[in-house]
Length: 161
Image (cartoon, rainbow, N blue to C red; front, top):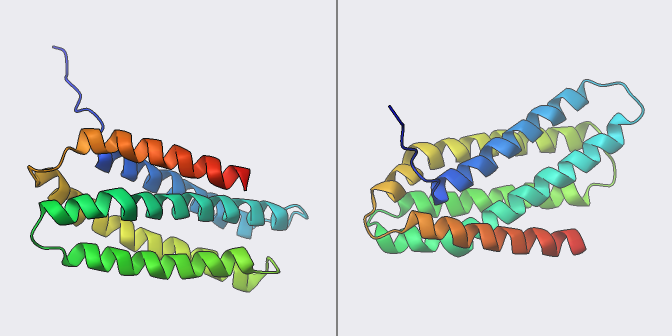
């Protein structure tokens, strides 16, 4: 019997970002245990990649996903909390990007950012995405395409910078 697969929607796309960054945080954690001379540069490079991914992810949520969801649902408290969480993550991202040394404090900031993102992801998956999928006014398939296009645009801008 053939199975029909639900087409990926905006929530699926955003959650794919979550899984990708989660794997990067795990890779970073493994690097913190390494005594190799190259570990410091690898941690810096991976932290920069994590920061770029999270920056773009937050921007597409704030520009496209959250405003559309605000229009479609009545209870927007979760979206207010999500935006506050984004602000906190952006502060940590700036501290990581501005850090002169890859030291214990640098590791701590990346670790805390990962924990922060874990919390945020759980709320999105368990509450925000559930509400988004239940909202009849949202075209999450069409929004996925808009999010993808904007993400590609932002990644291109950051790569060129």
